[in-house]
Image (cartoon, rainbow, N blue to C red; front, side):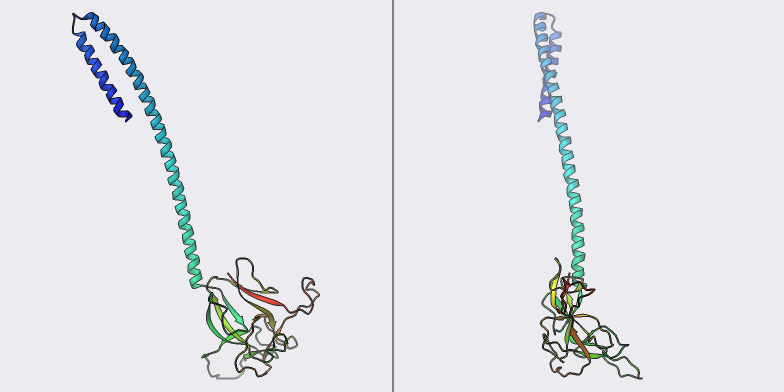
Length: 278
């Protein structure tokens, strides 16, 4: 709009100059020429002032445009950085989602036939087993053997290691003496890590409790060693496995004061445990 006003003013100047030329050619109208010249000079002065105003306005418009351009460029840069950050976040979340889908934390639910809930996938269920407690050279760890269709091979020579089914030992608070111990191998759908925490019934913030129970291990009076396992508080037994074979027995663990500080621990108290995933 300012440009059109400027053009109109220049056209007016041109007309005034044309009048001056024509008036300068008439010798017989000197006074008129003088008056016209003074009037033209006044108009030219006004036009010069107007031109200067327009130049100033154009400068202001250019300044505003530069400021707006800088502001827009800053906004574009900010949006570009935000988009890149969001793309990085999406990529990270996608990677985490893929990990959750393909690599969940695996844990064993001892003393129960099935996995806790819909958050976990049951790989298989079976029976707890391990080396006989009277063997000093046996393995210390407990295994969860599949309860159905095991793959076995007939031995070709003697001198093998032997694995036995696990049974609940004498433990009045469980009320399952001599019964076989079930187990289930589970995979968490919502986490890639799993941990068993002794002397706890709850998980840390951000972790999901899969189950809690009692810390148990082998018979301390036997020479064979055994790892600690967390047996579900709602313990179950294997159907038909109530015979007392006295093979791989498991017993609840109680705290013993001494090097173990009391408090917070208490002498002779059974120790809880919890299995958590994240």
